[in-house]
Image (tube, rainbow, N blue to C red; front, side):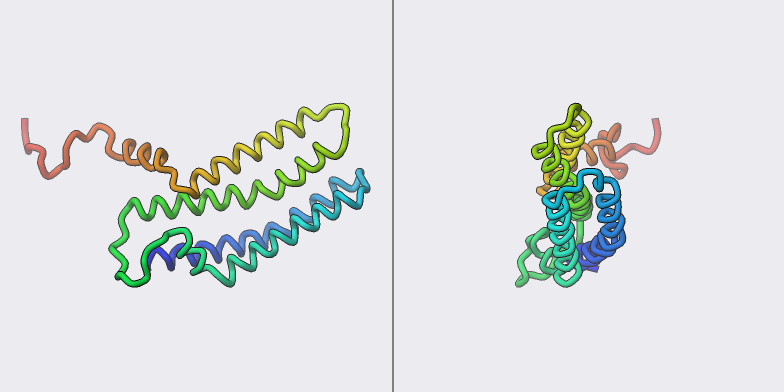
Length: 172
């Protein structure tokens, strides 16, 4: 399997995961936030759910387009054999995409509630907004390459190994 095919399959699996979780998100929003009884907040929730549905459809119907966008290899040259760095980059990008996709709807809703409604104690809502912003920042960092993360993984993998095992002497 080429890296593009792997990313395409992962995009479709991610779309399935989002489809499974979308009804629960909508249900929990409308049951927990029913105390507010504000049509504007309900409209925001419906817009977030609609955008998530569009993302689901894009992931399902255009997985190879997403793979070509994420991996950026030329279509004219034959694909080189996949290296461990390629697989690590794909994994980082998929984890980053997962973080962004799961945090963005909550960030939009919490930011809207925090900026629109004046509660006595907004500290928990403020912490929630900061948490989702941090998750999205880490997700975007992972999507865009995460070179530092890759260096940490390779350092941990090769820690304590001064040279390759082929060059080591067999005895004391």
